[in-house]
Image (cartoon, rainbow, N blue to C red; front, side, top):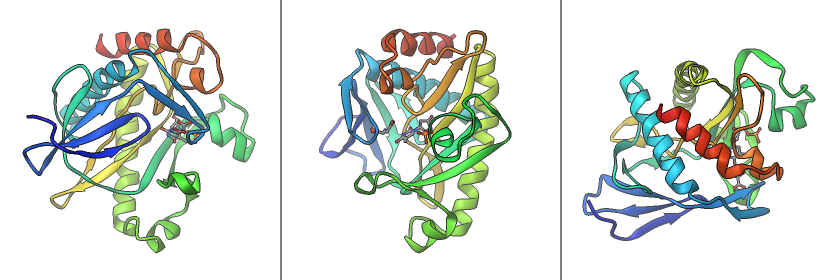
Length: 234
Ligand code: TMP
Ligand code: ASP
């Protein structure tokens, strides 16, 4: 399968059409942004690492009965995917208080949430991806109430699988962001799952092993990404 025209270029990936109208190729870049593009940089080999991690996780989720857009890993940076009509909602699931949950609601960072929290954000860079309640999503035509219920249920199922997978690799899954899309009447998990889109803390030391190292200039960004890759592929 070959790349034909560029369909979309995002902050971390390019998406290309292929000869098959049902399939696209996601190419993972080394570009890193944070705070909706206010901070920019590159993380050496991030594209290679995030493609490898995402392919492994999608394959594992498929084996657990969760449908994803992954068809196959084509090369170091390229993932062959089913083409999705992306639902303009970022679905964030949280197990431990961090990031905007701390900023917005005053939780102490590290507080374990008794039940996971699922949030929806509107996928719109011009508006800074605002948090939205279901009624906003429906009024905006982002998704139906039924679809939102599916997204929430799916996010919680994925959380249960990923939490255990990472715990087995001595990583705490603090929170993560998922994107879904429609494909021939089915809702599939899309995008990526990587240290760009998750928070991982080392189970023993609580060290941050994700994009927060880039966001807050903590150093050791590449080392953290490759350590996560090593543990995920183990
Ligand atoms: P937050 O605490 O900043 O709301 O982020 C929650 C999770 O979502 C965290 O694991 C990082 C991820 N995330 C993205 O993948 N993309 C984004 O644009 C944002 C804001 C967060
Ligand atoms: N992904 C967002 C950005 O590119 C925000 C973040 O991850 O912090 O700015």
